[in-house]
Image (cartoon, rainbow, N blue to C red; front, side):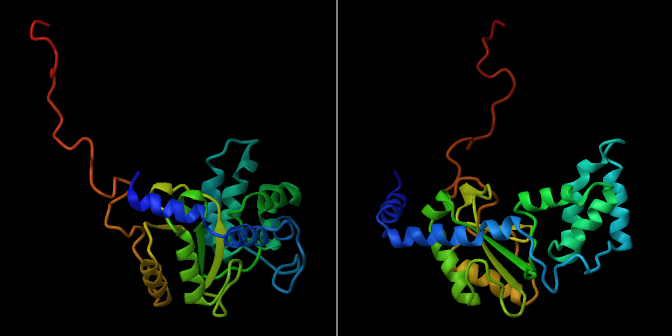
Length: 247
């Protein structure tokens, strides 16, 4: 085992339980049943607040629905809810009602989907949604330091939004980029192979209105070995290689 990986694993396995409780308790509080499944009217989120798709998004709705055969248009529930969320910045109950109206289904059908999938944010969000993975591979690669950097830099905790409404921080489960751990997802972009310095630079660029280049920050292109190729290091052989000469 790589010595640095072994040292990191040893350090993680001997972390005081108070640190482990931090991960568990923060995740639990951020994903509490009340936030996920129960609607409570508020000034900005109630059935009397009007929501309407833009003319451009109605054209997108037509294009989306055209991909589904007659009798199965309701299968477009997820893409239409996603479209509503992208237009509004988050998914209020009025937007769910509009999607149900477009699809000609009971409102409950929209509620069922919006409360099941964590991709739907049913509370106001910042312009940039920072989703940091703290599942095992990222944790072993010191995602705690990335989380700490974000919290100190923005002066917020998991589940909070900055006072300027620019950033919202969430702690999430595996985002599927384990080989590039630690990583964060910001809106639709993945930022991988992070160090605390990388995270600070990304936040500074976002604050400046720029879009940091997504992908690994380590210099590698994608998910190839960070120390270089260990296989397929020579040109492939030509046709007939290794075949008996009498065949």
